[in-house]
Amino acid sequence: QVQLVESGGGLVQAGGSLRLSCAASGRTISDYTMGWFRRAPGKDRDFVAAINRSGGGTYYRNSMNGRFTISRDNAKNTVYLQMNNLKPDDTAVYYCARHERPLGIMTSRETDFGSWGQGTQVTVSS
Picture 1 (tube, rainbow, N blue to C red):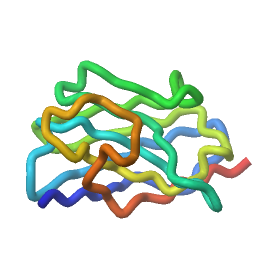
Picture 2: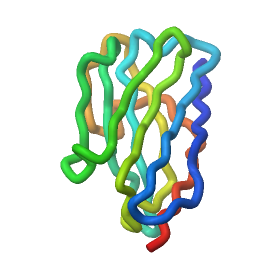
Picture 3: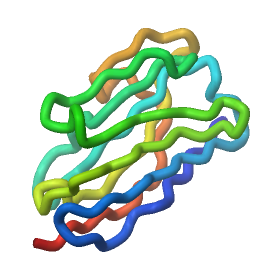
């Protein structure tokens, strides 16, 4: 069983940056597509970004492309989300997730991810 723990969230002013980390323990994540999702207040959880096993392929929600960067360090069993030029609409709880199957293809579908962290709060003030 893998455990995913997000960190790096906090309060930041609009235009600022944060770097989220997702540390995995219990199992390696190197064989899995990993993703970041977020849930804004009063809304459903939405896809943010995904990264393939090697880190050579990434996929973003359209509105994040250019501001957010997903990366991974398989040696550290960790996935990152660098967020720049943050906007108040980015306020949400951010979740890290592991694809439900090893060698699974990159996807934005929430149902394709089988393991989730508890989330980290990001608040962007105007």
